[in-house]
Length: 442
Image (tube, rainbow, N blue to C red; front, side, top):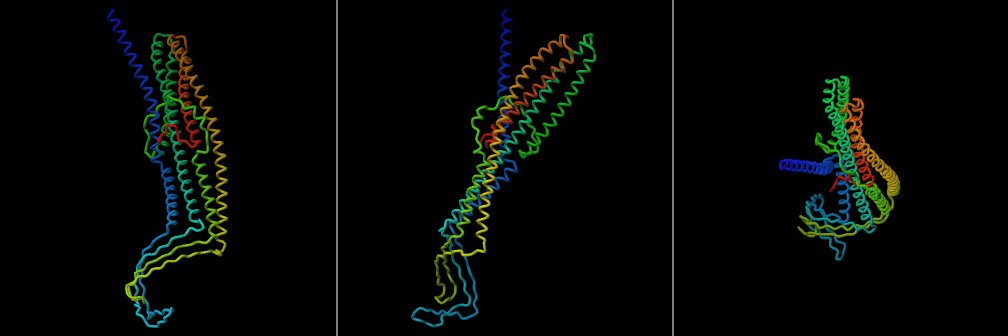
């Protein structure tokens, strides 16, 4: 009696341990899948050539902004000069007392010094151009973000496709294993005359068909992996991908907004830049002013004496009167750019609203498809359990058993595809709102 209780306790302990291990494995499997996708998205963000090109484009506009900012502070130059004269230079002062004395002047004059030029932004044109460059830089940065969102979404879709095809391969493999298991039962039944030999041939034919389906699925898997590897900047992607076990967050539907999309924000910045460009073109009609100064250390007699430095300071005001129509053409060009960007913004905004409505509808449809697939899988499992038991008892034909196994495999594959498709719809809905896939984290 004591040994009996001991065996029962041992069995319960083993079963509990196996259940705990299975539960922990499922939990870790789900978390590993999510973490793996997030890691892949970060690799795409780091290695994708298209994103590097977009970042380089942003750096161009950032440098243009710095150049525009530098125009406010003018420039200082160091210079040197060497001049030769072939006449006797005279200094003839015209202020009293008039002196016509010839003073020494070397034919070779060497000078060096500093010159300063500082624009006075009296018409605001420099600040207006700087404002336009600032908005252009922001627009380029937002375009870079949009490229990033698109690439991350594409990578996530490839990954979800691999999840779906992995679920199909697992389902087909499960169907194959179930048939092979019952194939042994059939062999025994054929030997004792309970079943005709054709049942074995029927099962072998079904197994061959399943192997072909698995081969086709693996070819699709290889193609999706190649596309994902190209985005990651690697030669191949060979990591195992698990079928997702969790569902998208339904609360996302309450966050629908297209104004946060980087492409729309980028066009808004381009509109501001175009408006500033138009203002700068109009301000070109206004006068411009400069402060100019220089200091020269001269080597050689120049009328004042040898090695005698001199300096000068002046303010220049320039009022353009006629430019041959150049300024009018530039104003016309700036107006056209502003109109083009405005209409482009309206076009993208209308398209974004359509995209988000379409993505939301697809999200809801995918949710319903998953619910139906989940229910079908539960039904197929129960039918398979009943059909298997009846087949073992000899009360079911081999055709009915194989049909049940095929329906279960189809239900499992449909479940995996529906869940992966739901995640794809969730990622597409996030992209329509200017958000990265949910697996991505900074």
